[in-house]
Image (tube, rainbow, N blue to C red):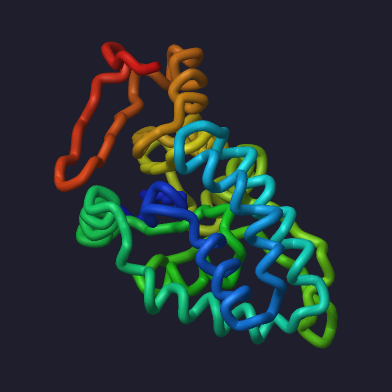
Length: 243
């Protein structure tokens, strides 16, 4: 039952209501692993601009990733793993009801449930454990032989990397991608949508909606869901009016 079908989920903004990497960064400041100025001077301005809808999410994400990559150099992965575990324990339930329900629905149908996320691999690992995912891929922050972060990364937030990841899963589980599902919220998830038969944009960004509307084939099968407060809206991509 559903053995060759998978549901691919982005995490930040799709399952989790905010950005997991931000929570880790703040805890690194709290635990004095890094100086508070790394947040207040480098990341917070971009975060506040995006939070107030005056800035671009991708600018904030780029600033966050660059800062995280820089400040983790020389830090033991054991410290980050402990912080990541604590973040999921404390914040892991702050998820959208729609995607929580979809995860459970796919599980009952016997589908593989796979996370494809740009968050650091330690975070994705613990989030996948919490929600009983079958597999996952996250951004790899590389360490040396002693487990110390080097500053080298293998990203998983962009559309090229996510496309490669789902095709790896296709081979691993002998999936029929035309029968598979995908869930995401930003332009980095576009190739997941293009390569699966049942894509759903969850609280999509304007950029993602624009790219979907440029793809006539994708327009035929995309679902759009917006969750606000305690209401889940299912929208018709052909009639959405947005600014």
